[in-house]
Image 1 (cartoon, rainbow, N blue to C red):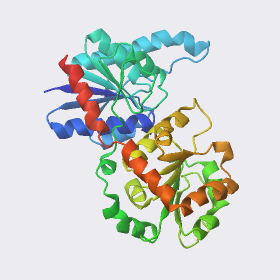
Image 2 (image 1 turned 60 degrees about the vertical axis):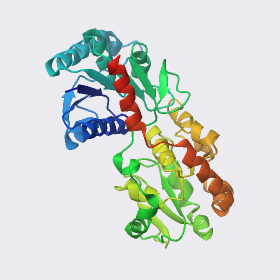
Image 3 (image 1 turned 90 degrees about the vertical axis):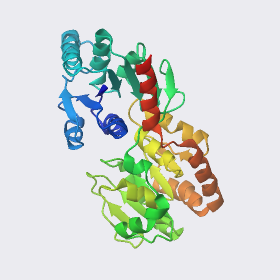
Length: 357
């Protein structure tokens, strides 16, 4: 029996692909040992046990960004975290480590190397994080979600996706999805969302332009985010939700998506062949713009800078696209070519090859 240690967490961008691979390994062979390494503070502390996997915890040790007390304490704290992971590897007889970035991944890479256990790195973003940059230097194999990701030895395997996305038959589910949100399955739908917390810029832009969208013959499914105080105008054809528990239903109904461009979002939309308009988050290291680049270059998506997304811009740029069926059809054909639903299988195959060396 092969035992894998999957390391990563902190955010959904690290946890969801990790869980997809865990499920893929277990589905292939129910006897496979699958352990997850994470922190007590991250999202994995809740999601991993819920999915039925054992969570081994390691100290959260952020890389220092400036010379201060935390930087002075970092070597000792990181060394302690590595020792924790080395003990797990020996205790559980781990055969291979697969890391997904985040706080748990860096000590896992070092521990695996010191224990003589092969490890594989998966990078979900087009601009890699520090843990994966360092890990890729001595990894047995490196998988990336997006072409052009600057990681040594990176091989494009795509994004491991949730099973409900991989298996989604949009056409078969459309009527049920429309009923769930109180919309007409025979009229096109613009899906707007900015992540679980929402995106104020997207909310404000749609709040000032929704009537123009409805006037173009479209409906709107708008996920405003848990913290949003945006009022629901109660208009027919405009469904407002704080949060979407069933993204599969939302995607089944979507004829065009307006959203942020986090790595998982772009990968899921592309895998389903849905044309999109991406509005990259303006704060951070610019990774969201890079995540969307392949879809944009292929003609499957458009990009609007965050600062430019206003109600006027929606009316000037988005509404004309809604009225242009031939242009949208071309975007959809391109979208069907750019995405992949086999990220889980492709990453597992990469890990198999690394383990067999």
